[in-house]
Image (cartoon, rainbow, N blue to C red; front, side, top):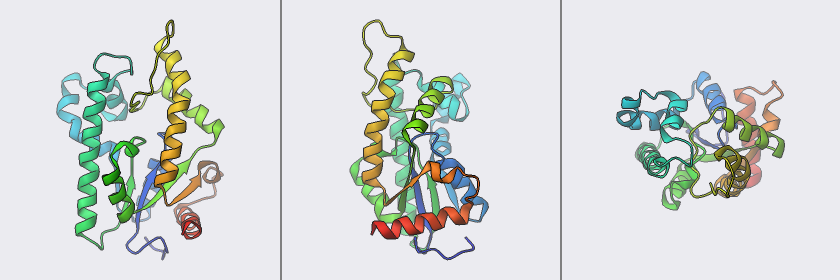
Length: 222
C-alpha cells in the first residue's frame, strides 16, 4: 500500500461478516491499491473442485447448489466437507503468516469463519487485525431476501429447524434472523474493531479512507 498505517507493518487485515456485507468488495479495493489479497471462497472452491466437477458446479453459486438447501438429504455431509476445507485453507494462510513475519495480507473470509474452532480463530487474531463489517437490521433483512433469491453457501450448524407445515423457504425466512444474530455476537467477540456497512455506502469512501476508518476504530478498541 502507498500509505502508512498504524494497523500494522506489515499490513494484515482479516475481513469478517455475513455474506453480502462487503468483505469481497473491500478486499478487491485494497488489492487494486497494491495489497496482496486472498479470497477464501475461491480457495474453498478449488479444494472442493474434485467433488464439484461431476455435477458441473462452478463459482460461489455452484458451491451453494452443490451443498443444497438445508433440508436436502446430503446437506449435513456437504456442510461438514465445506467446513473442513475452509479450516484447511485458513490453517495454510496462518502457517504462512506465522513463518513469514514480514508478509502482508488482506484476507476475505467467509461468513462461516467463526465455526473454524477457537484455536484457529485465536491464531487468526494474533496474526491479523480482524475487522467486522456490521450490517444494520434493515440491511440484514436484505441479506435474508438475497439468500432466498440468490443462495450463497451458508453453514446453518443446526439453526435450520423446520416446523410442521412449513416449506423450506418459510423455515429459512424464520430461522435466518436467529442465525444472523448468533453470528453477530460471535463476530463482535472475535473482531478487533467493527465498521458499520452503512458508513461505507455513501460512495465517497475509497481504499485509503477505509484503512483510516479502521485505524481510528482499532486505536479506540485498544
